[in-house]
Length: 488
Image 1 (cartoon, rainbow, N blue to C red):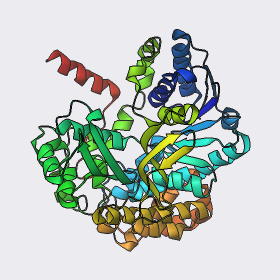
Image 2 (cartoon, rainbow, N blue to C red; image 1 turned 90 degrees about the horizontal axis):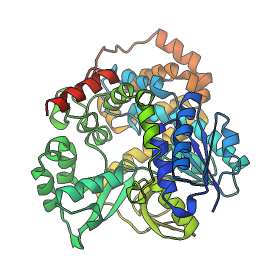
Image 3 (cartoon, one colour; image 1 turned 30 degrees about the vertical axis):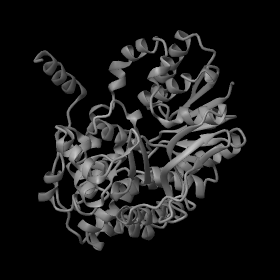
């Protein structure tokens, strides 16, 4: 069953290796072609060598190619997977630092909030370029699997404007289910059945069954509060569970920036977060983590290459959706997962045009979503606030309308809870000017934005945020871990 799989952004070495390994766990896929493409020749070379060693060590007929020519990689591809970050860490640093000057404290900033919206403005023109190439040179009916954030905005643009068969994929639902299974004392997550629905990063476990027994709010609250680790790391999520009645898929830190209640007062932020790891709410936590670990693969490459020579173990296949979707489409073996698609009535109390994340089944007939779901009203209201922002942000990215972009940022829940309209207008000017090289649709608006900034009236402040850690080098992190191991 030979066919071509193109991976855009394949220089994300660890993730690309995981996806490829998962795919090669399927016996029918042993002779696929992986066509890798990235803007970094160095990273491409590394991941090509890793996959090639893995293929040779397992004596598989699979093939791997690597090129910086994206169209060449996409030629004839039946599946296209994207895991790109447009602008890299340089642009991402501005997504965090500039809003901080206006009092907006983000943990991740890649979905909505000021950082996520501007991230989407950088990504969407590139996503549309991908879609154009897919339409023109990929195999007829090629499926686009988008892993890149901001998930909803990217998928929305690809479907509505790119006119490509697209599904957005994330692993937040799986991670949330693993937590729930653990606190309930399940032997494995396989004992847990659930319906999880909403929008990406704001998906809600609206029905939970442990070995067939329905789990209610009170039991779940008690289980989380009794857990020695999650009771401290997930304080905000537990509070939302108590008030909404259902658990959110998203991490404590991520969830805190989608809601207007927990990160708007600097003196309150520490009450809801945990500093044991970035994901629990640290200011700019994911940026710090990304900076500290950005070159991990360079020093670890020899070990990575050595491990690639080991036998592929199908029992260790990950729960990432991509390989399971491909397996279901190609072999007919049905797969149930949670997918990001256009709503079109799947969730009754969310708009038809929104990109929702909800359960579906995959087989040879495609991705078939479970329809007729109604979210609890509080969950729907929270999702609606983000959907309205996402819609404006996508339309702004397509049209290059900087005024619409400012309105999208103004309507973001956390931004609106912290900043005045004057602050938002100036902040967006500053972010567009800073990221101009990745924002071709706003080229016409940049000169006027620069002029306004030269006569800026809003005072900003130097502020590191409410819960900031110092950025360390990878060597420092390794030394600390080594010392901890020696200490027992």
